Structure formats: structure tokens, C-alpha cells
Image 1: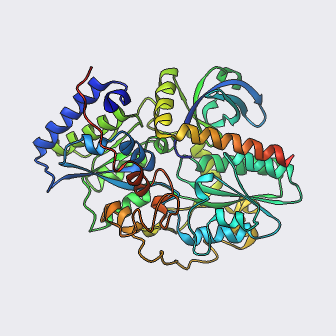
Image 2 (image 1 turned 90 degrees about the horizontal axis):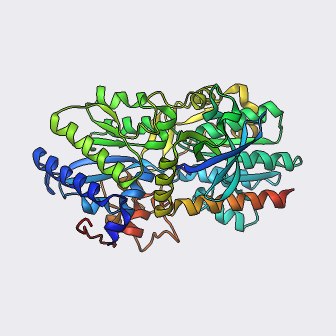
Length: 381
Length: 97
């Protein structure tokens, strides 16, 4: 029924699930001693829950939900800085809608908008650019947020603004990159991961080479995966087979979209516009070396940090998480979302206390939305 | 914002800015195609299926891949969210002019 309807090819799904079960048994993993595989990307987290893959796979396999949801790893102090920028009377603050409900220490962007700040949700930085062209007497600030899937779009928009000589457009750059937090997790002695399902669309931009250190330096397998449930099951199987065979390699299950070398135009634009910050704060994970991007000196005129004296370079005071919020422990796999005392009571998708409840790609929101749904494995038609 | 949504390039609307009109689930939207153009002429992109991330085409895909991806996005509710975000952004710009 639900299961049979929702998989494109239930026969293939059943075959993959059976193969996963066999390899789990060959490894000797059990519910008490599971194989732990982290899916890095928040889109994968959402798909795993939506299709119930965590329930269809054997108890000897545990999914650990990674830090790949940019909204969820956004520290409160960055939200405070966004609000501070938005409170300037000359500023129109533009942002992807995802960031609107992330709590800050004072207020979220949603609350700031209700309090009279000129904050506008945009689908694309192209729309922020167009708004700047149409509002020459205002300062349009775009909140640059996200991993490598959105960093090129911000870079290309800054290049376009420079080419046109726009003087009222700037970017509050909080872009982050995927590989450094993976390294940080692997360096954490409390973290026990056996392998990774790598992000699909991030890898489409950066290629597969940036993951080499995972296999070469840490001896862990990683398989770059697509978003279809069959892609995910196949990728999990590929990771498990590597573990069973004692191998560690970077493999690409999503080669139909992800070229090994990534997207050269995107990589060149990012190289031109950004440089790495020495370190950057991640919600729940703390400071991570070389994990954030800032705008290079040559594009200083388009850097809201420099233009308004606000941002990571100006104030590096970490802000404590709200009392009782366990996002950090959930993010590193030490707690399951439902083990947080605030889960579903003090923290819900409507009134999030922590960031993992804000986005549909956050582990807590996914548990909240799909946690109770029991999917049945129907016989294939 | 992290998952791309598939669309089909229908025309090149602004060659200087490398912008094209892309039809995404029946919605037309201007999209930057610099990342998929590479060395080829922009006109050769008309008719191609692409994955669009926040207004930028990031990858050329085939029609079957486009259909499969859209199906997953609909199942996750992400397609509806993306299309709503495009519509709201367009309305916001219309009010600004």
C-alpha cells in the first residue's frame, strides 16, 4: 500500500533491502552493536524519513543524521547580526524563506519583520539584485546562506553586481562548506561512525575529490548518493559492502548527475569571490577550522560585513544555546531527537526552540513529522 | 533551497547576463545558465533539462532524471515550497517597481 505506492519500483526496493539485510548479517551487526552510517545531507535525512527507510532497514543499521542542513547549523549570534542589519533604516534585508523562523537571542527574522523591519523573502539572489536595481535609494543586503549548492549563485550574483557597478547591493556572507565539519566529526573521539552517504547536489558542484581524505586519512567509506529512495538504498548497500570487505573508498552512486570534477564554472566563480575564514562557528558543533567563506578584498564593496561593520569578523562572542536545548547533542548523534526533554513540548515546528526543529531537513522536524508513521512492507505486486 | 528542482530551458532571455527562461512545473522563471553553458553557445541550451538551485541552473540532466527528481521533490513537499517561493519573490519584485 503506502510502501508499494511510494516506491517507483517496489521489486527493486525489496531486492535492495534483502541485500542490505544479508550484508548486515555478514558484518555481524545487531541492534545492540549496529553499523552507524551518517547521511550528511539534510535532503537525504528528509527522504529517509519520508520513505521510512530507517524503519524498512534492519535494526543492525543505524542512520546518524549529519550536519547538512544550513539553517540548522546557523548559530544564534548570526541571526542576531541579521536582525541588527535589518534594523538599519536604509536597509532592505533579503533572505531565503528557510531562515525566517530560526531563533536568535533577541528575535527571529520573522519577529523582526513583524516589528517593522523591511525584510523580504527572495527565491534567488538574482531577485535581490533586481530589487537593488529597482530601489536605488535603499541598501539591499542579501543573506548568503547555505552549502556549496548555493555558494556559486551568491558568487555569480556578486560578480554580476560588480560588472554593473551597483553600489547599493551587498551580501552578508555566511556560506559554509561540507568537508570541514566531516573532518571535525571524524576527529571527535566520542563519535563512532562506520561510513557516510555523501551529499548529491553539493557533490554536483564540488565533485568527489574533496572527500578523498575520508577514505585515505580516516579509512571510512563514503558513497555519493541521489535522492530517490532507491538511490539511497543502493548507496547504503555500497557503503555496507565496503565495510564488509574491509575497504574504504570514495564511490559515486549518483554519477548520472555528479561528475568527478564537479562544475568548473561554479568552482571558478567561488574561487574568484571567496576566501576561507580561519574558522567559523557551527550551532551544536562549535568552531570548525576553515569551514566558512568570506568575501575577498577585491569585492569589499559588496561585503555587508565590511560595509556595515557587522558580522563574524567584528564580533566573535559565542552565544549560549537556549536553556534545555540539546541540538548540539542531537547533531553529533549522542542523543536521538525524541530523547531531548524539549522535543514536542517546548520545541515544535510551529514554535521552534532549537534550529533542528525549524527546517524540514532538520532531524528533529523530520522525527516530529514522520516519527509516528509506521510504514508496512507490502509484498511486491 | 538545497535540493535543485528540474526545469526545461525554453529561450535565452538575456545573453549578456547569461539568463534564460526556464519552465519549472508549468511556472516560467528567469534562471542564470552560466554554470551549464561551459564553452557551448547559449542558443544550444534551448530545450535542455536542467537542475535549478535558487535561480541558477547547476547541472544538465535528461528528461527521465528530471521526472524522477520532480517526483521525489513532490513527495517531500519541496517542489511545492520552491514554486511558492518563486511566486512570492516575483510578487515582491512587482510591488517594488
